[in-house]
Length: 140
View (spheres, rainbow, N blue to C red):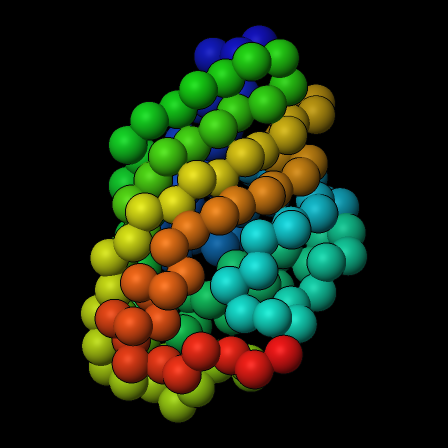
C-alpha cells in the first residue's frame, strides 16, 4: 500500500510539472481538500484544489516540482520537493507578473484513500519565494 501511495504522489508531481491538468483526476480524489495556501484566501473546500492548481500553473510557466525524498506510512506520504518556476502569468490573488524565477524547498503531506490523494497539507519557504519574486509580504 505504501509503495502504491508513493507512486500516486510521484505521478501527481509529474502531472503538475508536465502541465497535464487533465491527468490530475487520476491522482486526486474529486473531493480532495487542499490546505496548502500559496496565497492567503484560496478556497479550502472539497475539490477546490483542481482550480487552485490550474490558477498556479497559469501564473507560473514553467513550474516544475522535483521530488527529492518520499516517506510513507499507512495512508500518508510525505514529500520533500524542490519547486522551480517563473512568474510570467496572472493569478487573481497575486501581484502582476514579475518575470522573475524562484527556487524553493517544500514539504508536502498527503493523505490517500482508495488510491487517490484525499488531503494535502504543505509548508514551504514562503519568505524566500516572495523575496525571489520581488513581492511585498502580504497584509492580512
